[in-house]
Image (cartoon, rainbow, N blue to C red; front, top):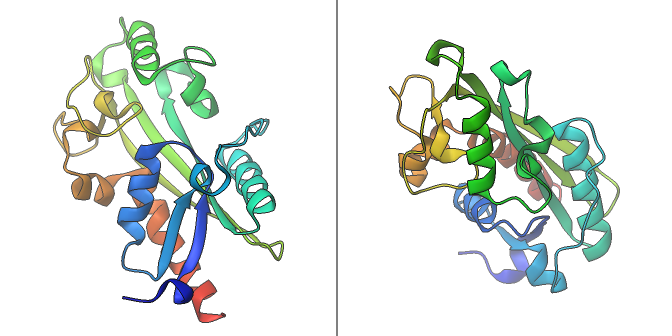
Length: 208
C-alpha cells in the first residue's frame, strides 16, 4: 500500500454518502485518498447550481471545492431524464419535489407523474458528469449514461436516489437498488464516468 505522503488526495464536493462510497469503491486500486468536503472543512459549502446542464453544475461545484480547500476536487452532477416527461427531472433531479425533498418524495412524485404512462413509454436514462478541478486551474470532465425504464413501483433496498425505480436495459425489470454494488458499478452512469476518470487520474499521477 502507498504511504499517505505518496497518495494523491482528492476532495469530493458532496455530503452524499452514497456517492462517496461509490467513488471510493471504484477508485480503490489507485493511490488516491478520496475525502468528503465535510470531513475537510467541517461543513459542505452551498454552491448555487445555476448551470443548465450536468456538466456546468459539476464544474461549478468542483471549482468551488478546489478553491475552498486548496486540494484537487471532484464533483458529480447527475440525474434522471424521463422521455415521457420531456427529459424531466434532469438537472433538478435532487430537487424534483422541492428544495428539501427526500429521495422518497422525489420517487413518489415521479410515480404520480407517470401513473397513466404505459410501460413501453416509460423509457429513461441516468446521466452523470464528473468534473475534476486542480489548484493550478485545470478543469476536466468525464461523462456516463445508463439507458433503462422506470418501474411501476420501487424495488430493492440498495442504492440511493431514483435507484429503486430505474431498471437498466437488459435486466428484465431488476432495479439498480436490487443489484450488488459491484453489479451496479458495471452498469451505472457513475461507474462509466468513474472508469474514464481513472484514466485522467493516472495522467495526473504520472505528472507528479
